[in-house]
Length: 445
Image (cartoon, rainbow, N blue to C red; front, top):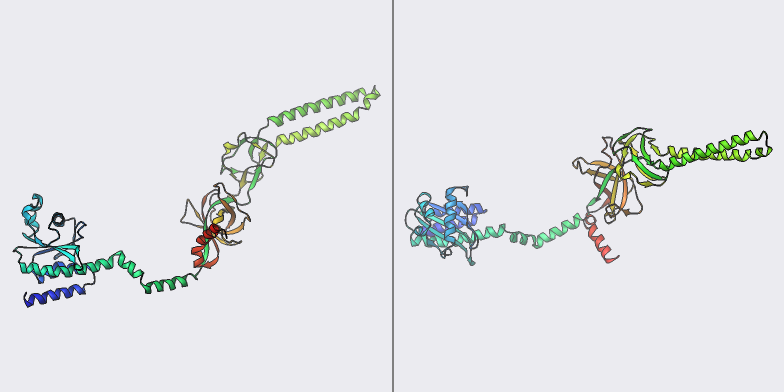
């Protein structure tokens, strides 16, 4: 080996040590190697002995496009050699044994003399990091192959270094270093004392504020609900019809009884002129007439109450009017309500497991399911002392909040998610509140 070749070899190895990135190393491998051994074309393909070789760098090109015919041809050649028994050793390729489709493109894509140079890590002779594929128009000499094999170990060592720095094991090792652990522990300890607002999310619904309840004044069956959900209701408008059959029958009977008592009273008055005994019955008959009149007036009032009238204007708030047809109700049972659409409140059902300390005036942000990008601010008005069972079979506290803005009120009945803001706590408590609660409940203390 001449002194010039040794000097050039040392210079290339020095350039390899100065490479800061994988891209710089690839450039040195496919381009700077030409200063030691003359060739016309070089390609670096990355991949170990179990992986598919992938073209990573080409001589005289800064960027490669693997979709081009030339790049596809190089990868097909590499795949063919990689599957042969000679893939683990440096050797000259013999195109005569190739498939006809690869052999036809040889003259167009590459010089005839091609050298297969696998790159094995010096400390792990059986672990390959890639392959250099070199080609030139003249035959390769043993001296050139020997220089390239020596240089291949330096390239493999450098490639292994970059692979280890970019892999997850390298970063895991860095994270597990004592200095990083100490800095992380101190940062977490200091951050745990940062005060933050305790918040919780819970399902919520827009409800009417101070609605007028339409209740039944009599015990009976509902005949028909005259309004539908969301209908505009005017003051004095009939909204519910009760079944009149029973009350109408009692009213007709009472009217006939009154007419009969009045007839008996008139008969007694006429007979009293000639029979003194009939005069003694007049007081009793007059009492019966008065009693029948009171009973008739009472039944007339009850009959009038079968038509339920709205005493306040607003919109009708109810579920399904059809479900009320024929349904028996008791005195005072709520059938529907009439509400002012501009007066709304927010009803929040906060599960017991998520409960936080809340007081009147605490901030609440409501995100509508139909418009989650425009939250609506509310403030807590009151909260129930004891939890109750929701329709979803969840034990939760009922929290009612008032709106704080004068914008257009959302429709009554819309649902969404409410974010409730409690008192300020440390970040550590905020993050570990749920685990602490779970452990406490599990252990029973």
